[in-house]
Image (tube, rainbow, N blue to C red; front, side, top):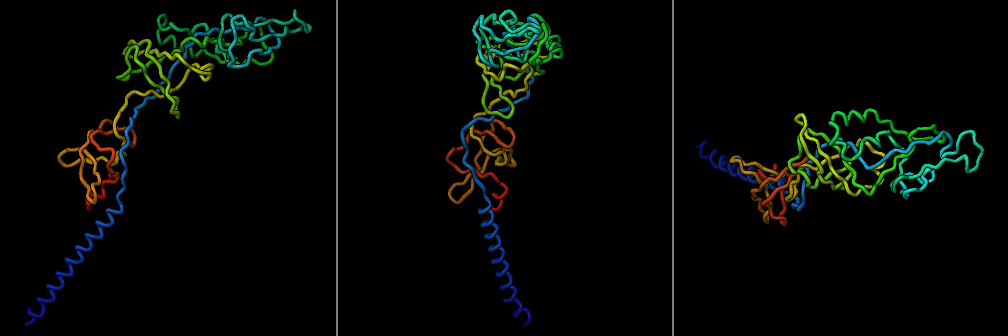
Length: 305
């Protein structure tokens, strides 16, 4: 009798449990749907960079003070002067004002003026890499002293760096490993740290010394920012990964090793296998995905759908 009374109660409890379970699943599924974040894949390219230190070599000379006295700058910093033009004048010490008390510093060739020489202008010239080892070339930089002439100058003091800015500029670099895309006469890209503008250079020379690679990069068009620099730090683009760009966290690896992403298809989520071209930071470049689909970028929630 007790069993007969208990049976309907047990059935009711079981039914209630099933309803609660199904309701709970529905709630979890609803929460999961609302939690999904998606992005559309954008065509583009990721770039892998490496840090480089380079020695700047220009076609230039240093002009020194012909006598002691008061310096007067005729041509401003970074301005161009014609061959034979007066760059600066020195009023000789102890001489009354007048033409006889003035010494002019003229340009032996047309070029750009810089009043911050370092004393290496007549030594570090294009082609020096064919005459000196990289050890000796870089040891010279330790002897560099950047001069900033004041109002009063002494005879023989370095005053002016005159640069032939119509000639190419060269970057001399020594690295342990050459980026795979960097080959002789090929174009390469460099960036100033924190900037997006690309510098396009050509590999003018490439050779091995002591298991290290010596690179000479040629920059044909350059601006005022290079006038007073001798050692620079740059970012080199060593690899490019073209494809569709997505957050790295969108990538899923299935138990069978398949790699892909989850995409929305109506009110369903389906797995789409992709080819990973490369990863940089928190981004990845992939192939095999439709640019018009919405890709799930937090795939954790798909397990509840």
